[in-house]
Amino acid sequence: MHPRPSPIAASLYTLRDLDADVIILHGPHGCCFRTGRLLETDGVRVLTTAMSEQDFIFGASDKLTETLRKAYEMFSPQLVGVVGTCASMIIGEDLKEAVQRASIPARVLAVESHGGFGEGDNTEGAIIVLEAAAEQGIIPKEEAERQIKMLKLATEIEKTRGMAQGEYIRPSYGDDKDEVALRVLEAIMEGRRVAFVLNAKKETSYLFADILTLPFSSLNPDNSPIIIANLDRDVGLPRIRRHAESILSEIERSGNRVDHITGGLDEYPITGARAAEILRNEKIEFAVVSGVPHALPVEELNIESVAVTDGPRLVEPLRELGYTHVVAELDAHARTLGQSSIVESDFGDALRRNIEKVI
Image (cartoon, rainbow, N blue to C red; front, side, top):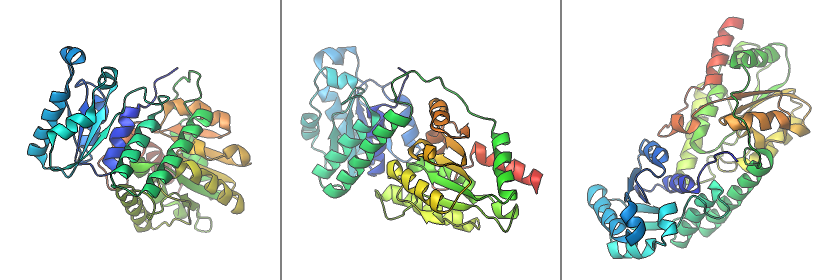
């Protein structure tokens, strides 16, 4: 009953992760405007065929062919993505036929996506790109199958534990960040067993990993928190592996270390359960879970906890799951696109301010 991410946008992001040089949206120039502009900061050229009312009646395959040729002249891309929209789907445009007529000397992935694709879940747009990439040999079939499995599990989590549960969820900006930050710092100083869990996805991990670089050992040298993170540098597409490598290196340079790695950045639907098992084994009393905290079964743990999320509509579901405190980071995607190093977060800033106060 409330707006959710679009399959079209998910197609764009997945083509980005495949290192597409150019993406062409076959639809009106306003379709997925914000996503297209944001992806430009990640080095992807996002173009549009700018379909108009006349094209809705007579078709616009010639526009797509012309745009493909112009894109090749301008950027000499090796990989081009062509993404359908609601408009092109409704009038029955044949994307692959237009691609064949363009006959440019680049590999082109044509993706027949639209806003209501499948059941309308955003992950449907990512799945169709992965299937097309495997069909053309851009990624191994086994890797596509692994990622599709993760995406389906992610949808299940959103529908059972997240913001896709069906009812309208009022947006909320969570608890006061300074008050929660003080509670975390007090727990460390009191000698409680504290853990920081990163269970994030893709580039948003640059924001949620910020708190893993703070000097918590200065509070209580005999009680350093443990760090658990889904930062396996050997899992996922090359871009995703680079993110994990970059963050791990930065955590190490800060003087901290990751004690447990639960999986890769695209495995967040299953790494939450792995993190929960580690929390039990380590006898953790207080956990800060950031990124996709609703993928961690906090209700199975008898601990004080903080959820750090990027979704205002996830605040109430997280409280219902059992998190003691919930804080929200805004615009995680916008703040991390194009980044290759950790970005300061609002909750990280709150912790910094209060570390200075309590030391």
